[in-house]
Image (cartoon, rainbow, N blue to C red; front, side):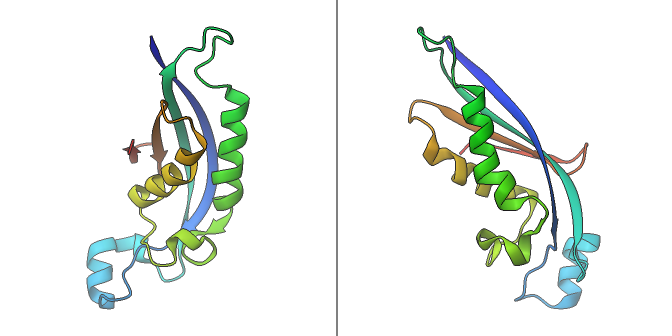
Length: 135
């Protein structure tokens, strides 16, 4: 029996959506307010879900304390209260869209999970705008 367990966390970060190889006009037309040269911030809500078999000895799919600590190390300490463009190496050459942030989070957590576990990342940039990535 496969069961999905989830942990919700929050982090705050600033970013600017732009491509250095595009003109200012094209960046503005494409990214609008998100292209602000002074950056802008979000209070991101993150849901990390792990799906797998229930361990018959523990009754867990995954120990939620382990998942909590993993998110803290790989996401919160890495991205919280940071300027994603300037302070987070993953975005040195990667536009920090919600889609790309979710993929980066997935790639930071996935190596720490057993191969038989499935991982899903949901990242809410606003209460109504969110992305889901599961590899």
